[in-house]
Length: 88
Image 1: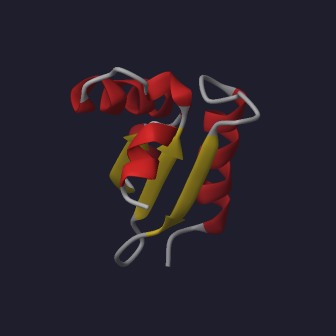
Image 2: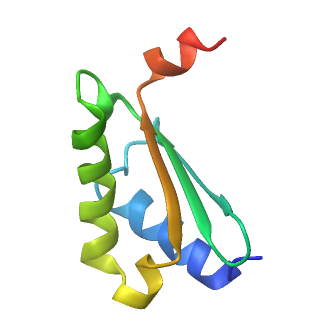
């Protein structure tokens, strides 16, 4: 299980940073072992390529976390609300 304090720090930094809109959904959860998964649903991803979405997320993580901390993130997914609707 991943460190609860680190998961909370990641969530807080993402929600107080670029993904601060009340409609931005940020989910930080346990991955395998002590790794962390991040899923963000935001209109800020509209029209962006996968690479651009990853860059938006990782730019925030690298800004606010130490190398050791962000090294625990093994998955990050950025999706627009329209992306989510296609799976429903």
